[in-house]
Image 1 (tube, protein in one colour):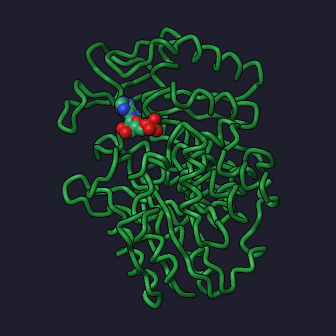
Image 2 (tube, rainbow, N blue to C red; image 1 turned 45 degrees about the vertical axis):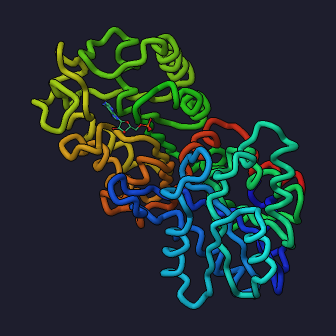
Length: 402
Ligand code: AMP
């Protein structure tokens, strides 16, 4: 499907003024407010450099965080500064405005080979308004004075917001290199994965991953489950889980997924042992269990050594591995072993390895193996929705209007 996306090569960018929707929604350090990980900025560079080389003038629009109205701590000014460090030869301007007079004037003055970064688009509630007319009128102001629209914001493609959806209906629209690559890789593993295809799914809640599990099950050979969501699966089979995190409302769905797996003759694996703690704390009293059962008053914090051996052995034999969600509370070093082991095992796979964004993307960085993966997605919610089999509005609009 990605081949049908209108590509940048088809955009005769020479001398044009182009609105580029980038995903500069970068994590910020809680204490200093500084950018703690600039992966998303770096990921936008191929598209920006390509358009600059074609002598286009670029107006960049993005959101950052979830502001309710203008919020200085979420200003894109710091992102513009970071961008300057990567594109040293390019004049880069920032304007603390989005669709007002100052922004329109700067857009009009912008010359070929220059970049203008607009302020956080979510400072205006019109961006996310439920009213299509409101969103469209706002998008028209964003597009004012510009010749084309490029969407390279995969991480926001699951939202039908003004700068993602409406702008594509107003200007000739194209997919940036990052958006195209993300869709290409996910599409390939969902439709033409080389076998054995192993999916490793972890994280806190089964409720946020149930649709992903249901969509993946018929496509994979093995599904390896970790993280807190494993305890809901274990409890659904009457295994003792002590004080572990559990979603009791999802016990029957977990049971059904396991039933479906055996009906489809797929291997759905659950942890065989655990690292458990007497409280949710880095200083807790911790120990490993001998088997699946978790003793009373203890909670599961990570997969245990037997599970690590079993899961990594399966991963090593795979030709395609998709990973989303940590195996344990990896933010605490003592409970990060399972998650790091998965990252390292994936790094040794001779085949396609895809990390589905969010915490798993952070974990492969922690394990220093990000560069060994075929692809580390920049999307969190967008990746999950694509893996659920849903259509992403930001992608659909490019397919429909091109
Ligand atoms: P998610 O956003 O659903 O992928 O969940 C990621 C979060 O799951 C991380 O913050 C982990 O700390 C958390 N997590 C993983 N395993 C456990 C566990 N055994 N108990 C509590 N939280 C967990």
